[in-house]
Length: 224
Image 1 (cartoon, rainbow, N blue to C red):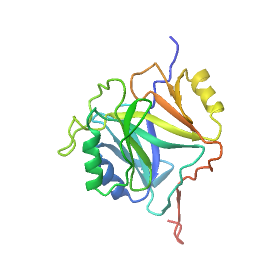
Image 2 (cartoon, one colour; image 1 turned 90 degrees about the vertical axis):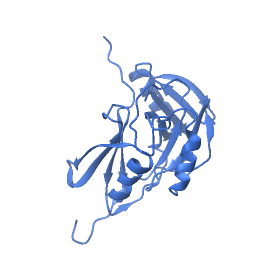
Image 3 (cartoon, rainbow, N blue to C red; image 1 turned 120 degrees about the horizontal axis):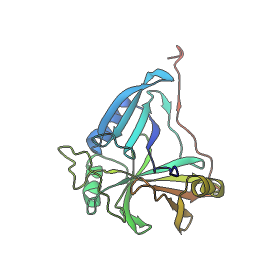
Image 4 (tube, one colour; image 1 turned 180 degrees about the vertical axis):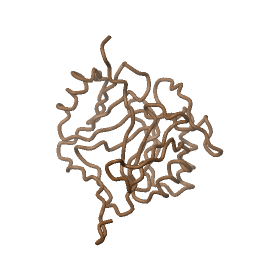
């Protein structure tokens, strides 16, 4: 049997304040904290895992929260947006919920025939809630305020911003067996047939975009 890349497994990012990060993803977005461990290269740093009820592949967003951190800047060479699948008819709920929690957001828009709502987490990470064009049967984690009719089901896609899409696109198609699906302007969609969900990588080609800047932790004079 030919080995295949089974879509997006997990995504890792950097946060600032650990409590704000935990509160946003569990209380505002209604994800489950699947696991709390440490960065094994830096055991003084937490490693948070947020996802669905059983920690399914394709649902897990992890963070290294650093108290003294320079906020990163989205740009070329980075994953610049993370898209979550949500049920049809749920975006109005999320508009109100994000507003009630003073979350910076955009308006409901559409791309590739799918409605979506973009917003930022407390550290400026770009997130999107997307109503997928195909049925998503995954069972989400529910809370008292976020039930299954509106809850995040797991990843829908990730967006990479690149100055030149060709080298990465060739890896996706020639090595990972993704297929090019369609383009809208400078946004290009690739999808694997190996799995039904968490299967999409979008490439935004911006030839003049400046390079992205990763978050960086500042150390105190004592080196902590």
